[in-house]
Picture 1 (cartoon, rainbow, N blue to C red):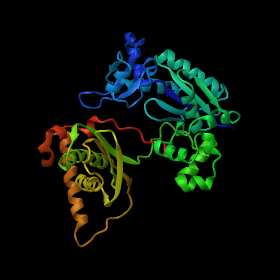
Picture 2 (cartoon, rainbow, N blue to C red):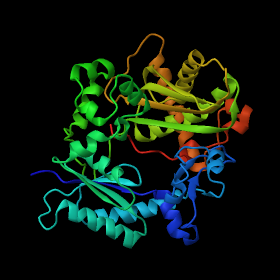
Picture 3 (cartoon, helix red, strand yellow):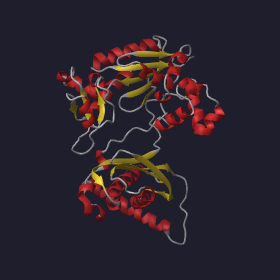
Picture 4 (cartoon, rainbow, N blue to C red):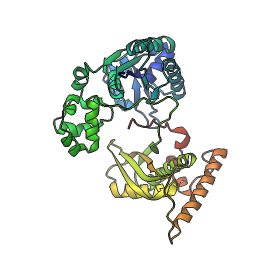
Length: 410
């Protein structure tokens, strides 16, 4: 039996919710954006009217206002968006228990085998019900695999259903640019274009060995996806995704100008990351940092840790080592991030004459005790002395305040 998989995307989700709750905004250009005062002043999403001004997600608010002087900026209300997401999800659950979320506003549904209705009838019914019962619109892609279903939901917006089947996917999918497909980012797309691969049709018909030579095994995987050969299942709604990384990032309240500034911010991030890892019983073996300068140029670097760990001071030490080796301070730094991956649950401690294992165990017990104090008395009840020298940079709480984004499709 051919699979019938839906990908449902809530159109302009945050902005749609705001316009539903505030009818006076519906005929005006509206963007949901971060706070310019805290330097998170970018567009998170915008409504259809604002889209006519060529505004883009991630664009600074000052730049957006130059394009659209009458743009209305609404601050995000995440609790409200979660509530609306649950309402939409409740509708999905009336049709199937094979529901795999991809963020707050997107889901895959497997409706294969419903003998009362076709996948297309279910897609149209869900589209109408969400509009009537929740007050926002969705776009739906229907296909025989998850990759093409997502391409379908992006193909026609807003408030539409697009069917991509075996008989028409070459006419629809193969004409699309490569970066329309999930998992093809800017760098991969630039490399493909460099070699004359512009569309998903070009990718689908490219030589396998050639793709492997320029992109490794990921190139072969992308070719399979472009050819409609994805066979990954839609997960049951009770199954959570495997956690592959734990991290936090921040846009700093002022530009960072020296290594001392960087170390303060890394310390706050590291304490949050390590605390979250200890809470869930993780120890990681790879540390990554991301750095963006004042002109929004960015880079990431990673390194192996000396041993599986969840100790914040080890993260800070390695993060600073990576940063110093890779940044020359030609420009100030605007934002930084830190994440830990490659979790190790099985490797026994390797004891040595230096007593490193014993030291690490003592540090982990110390930081775990600090965790319990913070849980009871608040995040700022006890802090590292090093962060108190620059309270303008250290007084933020990524453990409680920062949004943790969903694990990527891969």
